[in-house]
Amino acid sequence: GEDVEQSLFLSVREGDSSVINCTYTDSSSTYLYWYKQEPGAGLQLLTYIFSNMDMKQDQRLTVLLNKKDKHLSLRIADTQTGDSAIYFCAEMGSGYSTLTFGKGTMLLVSP
Amino acid sequence: NAGVTQTPKFQVLKTGQSMTLQCAQDMNHEYMSWYRQDPGMGLRLIHYSVGAGITDQGEVPNGYNVSRSTTEDFPLRLLSAAPSQTSVYFCASMAAVQYEQYFGPGTRLTVT
Image (cartoon, rainbow over all chains, first blue to last red; front, side):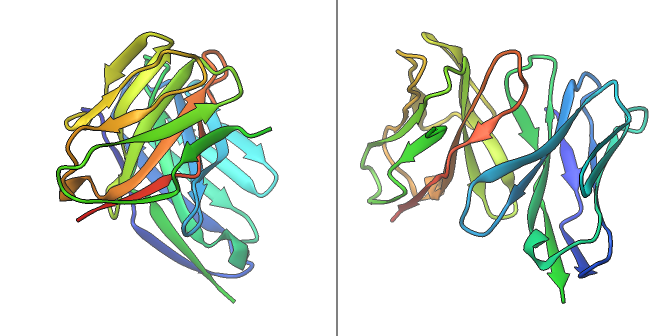
């Protein structure tokens, strides 16, 4: 089946930028997503990008997509301690109905 | 606006027991899905539905049944619970042409 890979852990200092990376194998991916999960909570949709775009910006969040290399990244500017959470990358295939998730990247922001 | 709701929030079962996890959405979304989340494994798709009366298997369907008799509800049944089904279960819904999948708060299930 299709696969989505992420690094497991990232540690940054408050005020720095964070970059979380993701690679995927599905060449027919249509949309790519970033979700945030805080401890004990559900998944919050942060942002998503259509596969024919290469960048999307939404306030402190910047998503970059390199479709040729099947590489997606999420940049969080001016990272705050409240950004500490697990971030999941996910892709939607050509069926347009379900998502395949990576294992998640734990972001730890220290003061 | 309730969004996606799941009940119960927590459940403890003994091996061999059966139960139904409830999921409901009030957004008139056509697509609904069940995922399980295990430590270090991300979310894995169990079953999904693209409309009332239509269901299909995901990556890890064994031991689970679903049905979709209405647009709003998508219950997940555990037929004979096993310790390997200890997990957090998330239900999600999505409108067919909007591509934004929304998740419920989850059900934490422990099977002893």
